Image 1 (tube, rainbow, N blue to C red):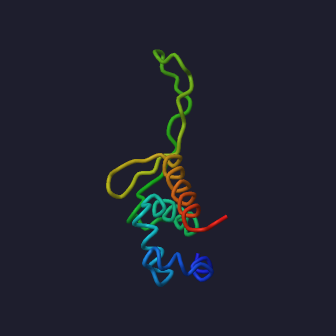
Image 2 (image 1 turned 120 degrees about the horizontal axis):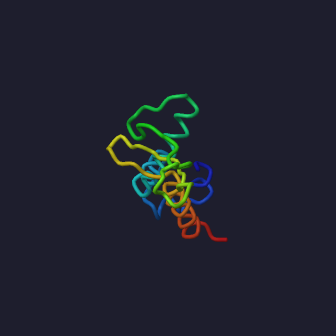
Image 3 (image 1 turned 45 degrees about the horizontal axis):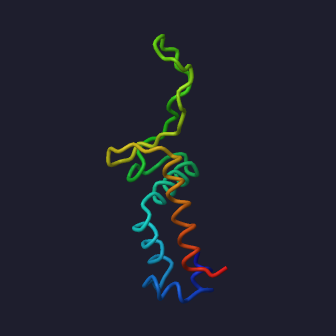
Length: 111
C-alpha cells in the first residue's frame, strides 16, 4: 500500500494521512474487521496469536445426528472468538473487509 500512496498523493490529502503507518491506522479504524483478518494471518504465520484481537478460531456445524432434527447437516462455518468476548463468522468478516476495499478503490482510484 505504500506504493499506492506514493503513486496517488491525492489519496493522502483526502484521507489526511502522510505516512503508511497513518494510512494503516485509518484503515483499521474504518474497518475493524481487517484487524481480525490481520491477526489470523499473522497467527497462522507464527503458529500463535497474540490474543489481543482474536482469542481462538474453530469450525462449527456440520453433521448433526439429533433424532429431532429434520436435516442431517447443519450450516458449517468458521467461528472466530474475539478477545472482547464476541464471536463472529469468518465469512461475515471477509465480506465486510472486501466491501471496504471495493468501496475504497472505487472512490479513490479512477478506472
